[in-house]
Amino acid sequence: DAGVTQSPTHLIKTRGQQVTLRCSPKSGHDTVSWYQQALGQGPQFIFQYYEEEERQRGNFPDRFSGHQFPNYSSELNVNALLLGDSALYLCASSLGYGNQPQHFGDGTRLSIL
Amino acid sequence: EDKVVQSPLSLVVHEGDTVTLNCSYEVTNFRSLLWYKQEKKAPTFLFMLTSSGIEKKSGRLSSILDKKELFSILNITATQTGDSAVYLCAVEYSSGNTPLVFGKGTRLSVIA
Image (cartoon, rainbow over all chains, first blue to last red; front, side, top):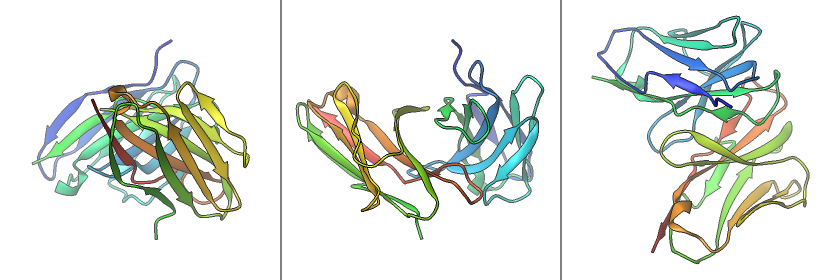
């Protein structure tokens, strides 16, 4: 039973660049959420996708955007990268919109130089 | 103001000790409280609590929710070095724009 998988594992970018992170949900799950986890902090919610639409959004600027595909996989895009975007980006999936628990992937460690 | 507050932020214990981790939260539109363990990467799900006073147990770990006093505790008995991790508490609110609000976590270090 495949869990949540994310790619890439690590990424190094420079300020101003754009990045795309990818997530495949746990088998059978249809809802995907993205979180940003800064060092020493808990994960902060970015947005959630269900039925290929963004359903909820946290307090993140429009530079953060996403997409969900018909197979439930998802992408997180960040434009105009800032130093403060350096963090672990976690993807979580769940079965059904609004249901818990969410199951997390190992994350993508993004470093901005 | 933080909606979910965990304490202590870090803790060092010896193998065999019993530890209690705390999580307090705001009452407005509470739906459930979840505990996760984060070692190096993925937070792994431990417990989900919705009802007050009902203990959930898994091996040496247990957790309980107090909806009157607005807190939860996570107990770990007979700690082992493999319990070393960050323990995250998250609260699901039925309104608002975020499905889960996380605390900052408690970093537990178990030394032999």
